[in-house]
Length: 146
Figure 1 (spheres, one colour):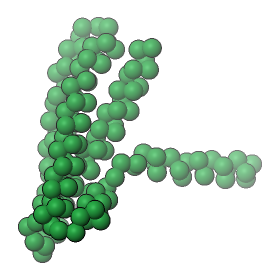
Figure 2: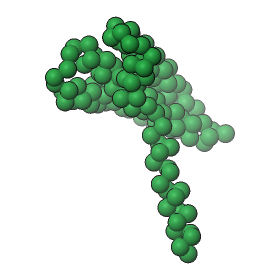
Figure 3: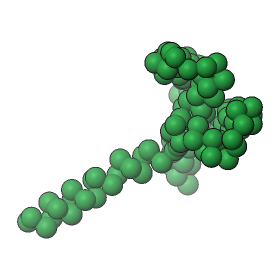
């Protein structure tokens, strides 16, 4: 019985790690700093990562309505998903901005370039986490279609 509890504990202690596989803002920030030493290059790296994550997010959000249309049979649910999915995405954008603004607020005594790099890294990290959630949800939806 103790072995069963120990095995369950080991399995459940690993599960949260898998759900946070996306890089944090600090990971992204450090990756740009390790790659480039000049602050302008670090800023460009952060901008590129942010723009890439925004493009991926827009692409994933564009797939959502098609998936839900294929998944739902009832027109009521299709209309509901078309109505509330953009609202959910807009709420995420608000959350992301406020979350990163607060994060930057806590770094009051740093220079403007560092603030911008951290802001971009924070936004990128939030995008990647949201993308991971969307991909899991859409993958589940696709499995239901098969």
